[in-house]
Image (cartoon, rainbow, N blue to C red; front, side, top):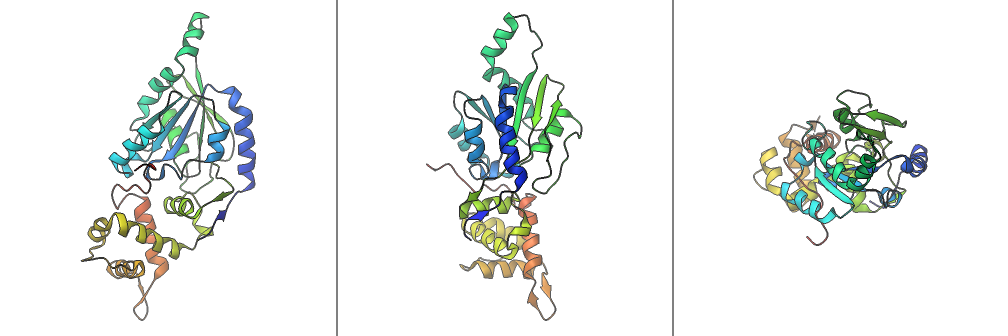
Length: 283
């Protein structure tokens, strides 16, 4: 799998909007997928929001290994950046956002109070790549379904401000990817659904996922699919999973598309347990 080019026109527009609207906000909340912390970080966003106080939310943290997520948190935090482990669907960890913003914007809030502004509304831009849970996060914070939620990349298209009950105003932005990504990043994004399945060879994608899981989470595969052992050949492991799950077509042949869809769905929904696909470099 070589470099993938996937940069729809609306993402070019979003990049311009982010740059133009940064002056309107006090801070940035960047949402990443805790399973692929590096791959779900858009270098375009890194450059665009540089200099703004930032909170990085490691979303879907309940689907990643706790110890790996803690290492990422330590790796990413700095004077101007705080990192929180959250789950946007359940709301876990979201109550830490307001205190984190108060800490990051401490001096600015103090100046506002000195000018007599007691109930200062913190304005925050929410950024992130597709399918990391931005809409679910905003809905949770707003406690209603203002932002459209979908399980497919790119459902959020238009800029909108959302007021929350704790005095935070959120500026929603569509998810943007970047023009090119290397093979490992492409795979990680595809495994988690940030790249549309339609532009991938889903059977090859499932094969590569089996390869990755066999190397790092072999026992999980064996336990989940009732395998007595794993082969050194990823294709054999995928075929064993297919037979165990009845992904067979007429004549006893393997239905590779069906087993691929099943495996990817089960990984993406967390049925294989807590899995981290990336670790900090020094690890």
